Length: 389
Image (tube, rainbow, N blue to C red; front, top):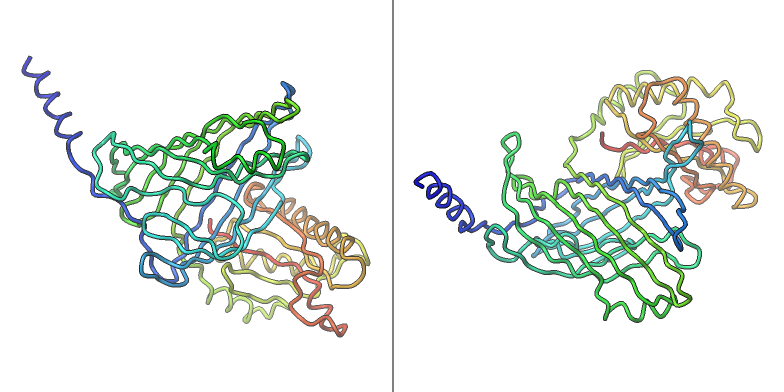
């Protein structure tokens, strides 16, 4: 009996200990890298339409500190798995640039861009006991993969529960669960717009808050949604999302610049914006073709040498053309050229195919005015956008 009384005493003392409420921390100019892997199964009227695999790679930089939080600039690359069964790879499906203000509790006010998840997770505004709960609303993006209905931004009510703390490698984490269900009242106007009779389902998540860094370091989500349309079409979406976040170490930019200068690489430049990128200007392909000229192989090898010297293993290859001719044709050609570079790299080097992706921008992002042949040559380039490992 004494043993049982002792165990009961310990449990009571643990569960009655207040947990000091968590807050997001913000340091000016600090960057946070977030990577989400999403697997979604789509069923329409009982017919299986397959499973999509997506990755979202995000970098967010704290530009300014505010009274209640921070002003943050972000960019998210949405990648979709494509290709044949024996040769699947991730291609950039979309890119979002955005700015927002975030409070220490996690409340977000977006200034520009970003059609997606907002106000999640929200941290508690008071001390909590283990097992104690609180509620907060959020905007939740439901990706439809369906021509009838676009992606939906839903109002969700989340019930959060504090589950306790854990220590891993001397770092203390707060662990929370959250269950989200649709706010049917707020969704009425949206439902009517797209002939939706009802949406049922849930999002269940577990997330860990890093008390040392003041960031949410991981989120695991299981979701299951069912849409019933006015014509009684039934759309079922289910799957899981795994998200990890970290503050990445700075890249050795000065060393990379020295390599470019010392080896006198031709028309290879380093650019620093929200992310670091390397440009190969005036890159040569066969006319109006994605076929890479043999003369350009050494320049691509030079870029890989720079990346490897910096320990880079994740990057996005972006093809650009001069803004000449039909924009649609130029967009397609720029993507095909980026894929040619991707194919060459994957054939020659041992990079993980899931870490390298590509896209094309046509002539929409010139670095020169495009008025002279020399300026057009500089706009005709391949860009390597460097992501944290």
